[in-house]
Amino acid sequence: MIYWYAVADFIIVADRFFPSSKLCPKCGHKKNQLPLSVRVYQCDNHNCDWIADRDYSASLNLLGLAEPDVMPVEKQEPTLFD
Ligand SMILES: [Zn+2]
Image 1: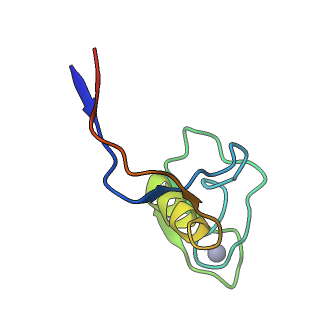
Image 2 (image 1 turned 90 degrees about the vertical axis):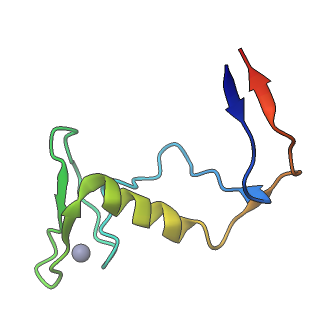
């Protein structure tokens, strides 16, 4: 059994093409390519010193995306999937 329930009053949906893994969370520089095998994000901007785990960097970019557009949804009761 899988229980799912909302823990917030709203959810934020990122566009499927939002380049969360390719953006530098510090300066906003965007890499043209970043293969999945590369697990550390190192910014290509010579004025920026950002080096961090790829997923951590992506999470910061998604967090930054969360501010302007929010999609409110109703509070939901726990839902049971089986
Ligand atoms: Zn940078």
